[in-house]
Length: 365
Ligand SMILES: *Cc1c(COP(=O)(O)O)cnc(C)c1O
Image (cartoon, rainbow, N blue to C red; front, side, top):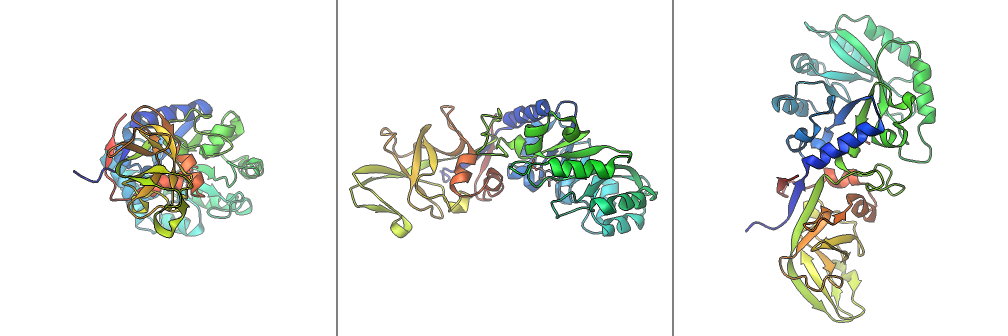
């Protein structure tokens, strides 16, 4: 028997979440963001659930090739554009749309030989200071692009730094609209947090939205709002089983560094899941976990291949009992990935993306 750890991807939940994002931003076309191998889920496992998207957005050219090989004939957008001139050949061949965020990318386009002109998204740096042209330089970048025979339609995009937080997006929305006011083209600015929180505002949803984490059932603004608050369903379950049970006496400690000491007799379970599976080592005693669908907590330190859990609330649990690290238990109980991420001082995004290679993955609605 293989080691009992398993990740399960739920395409029907992806589809549900996509529909949820659409309802939040009515009438906007929707880019389904599948970068980082669909946030760790596997592009081939989620694509079925994304069939009703208007386009697929990603970063890696190899992922764009995979999406085409899987039969996706709609738009594909490279969110960071091309990384070197010859990438443009693949864009021409696979008809990829691409972001243009710097002068070098315009130079490369100007030197590119293509039959079919490219559709590009000109990126504005409206305050995040990673990629894009500042509002002052945006118009001249547009004029340069607009003069190129290699370029077909030019659309406009920017990215928010604080869509999930207190600072908000108003300053960036304003900078974007001011600088693009009289330019002809489609517009795309909203990420997941902006879709959920501001999708009802016409000046935010615009022509296209870019839905990422919302598709994968994690609340972008957790803990202010939970996945349940937003009606999002988990798209990934990480599960395993108990491979041992220990009876502790008062004063007994558990695991590396003896980080947990029992203050009374108790039973703990040993789970076949550790940081080498992608479970965060920063999760200390008290991280929520489900055993046979019953909520309990981890005790002691996460090790490479094992974690230990308190079986007090589940006295019937024993060797082979089901453990849900995040996602959906067999009895239907849910453990939001955001709660586990929080315990590790990180976000749901990171846990999904960090699922380890050694974990087998199943697909089940
Ligand atoms: C990753 C990414 C998104 C999606 O972000 P979420 O917070 O997951 O919705 C949108 N736009 C760009 C440019 C991105 O790189």
